Amino acid sequence: MNEILISALLVIGSFFMLVAGLGMLRMPDLLLRMSCSTKAATIGVGTMLLALALYFENLGVATRALATICFIFLTAPVGAHRIGRIAYLVGVRLWEGTIKDELKGVYPADACLPFGQECLIPDMDAPEVGADIEKEAD
Amino acid sequence: MILQTAINYIVFPLLSLTFVLGFIRLFLGPTLPDRIIAFELMSITAAGIIAVSAIVTDEAVLLDVASAWAIISFLSVIAFSYYIEKWRGRP
Image (cartoon, rainbow over all chains, first blue to last red; front, top):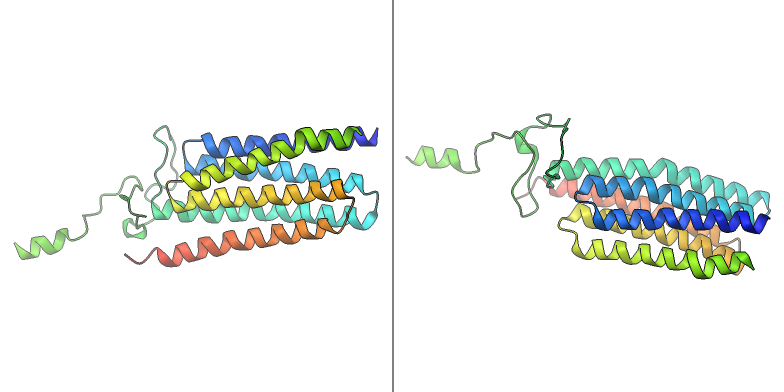
């Protein structure tokens, strides 16, 4: 009975990990990909660590497993938030179907510099780099 | 018996497939943050693989490896984002 429960938890966890991998490959946008990897992978690893805590019927192992679960649940959103903010500032291309962008216009236009592509923070009416210099030359 | 069969035929293949999918995104990813999140997914998958290996080999010590691995993965993500933020101001 216990073995069946552990097997079920492991299979559910690995299924969630597979969903995270599929989302990572198939989603159109960095932020959507990040939501997949954060949520699904976190719940997958949490379920697998729960199975591990049930397998070793030992208080120390169960405590460490629960501590690891808590750590992953706390740190995954922090890392995702940090990378999402940096990606927005750097000007990563958003999906064309994006309908709501609450950070639009919050950051100043010169807060972003691209990774070898044009800056795509929306609603940016900043003059092109070097435009004022050309005017002065005229 | 059920546990061994499930791990051998379902859990390890699914986790390996996840690893491969993450690696494809790491290879394709158009920008640097894409590659960072693919790397994060791969490292979390590796933590899961270590946890399953602890069940297979019946060694509880591997759980410590998994938790240390999770800590290092989080720190690497924070370090990557920190250096991108510092690098952002340069042309």
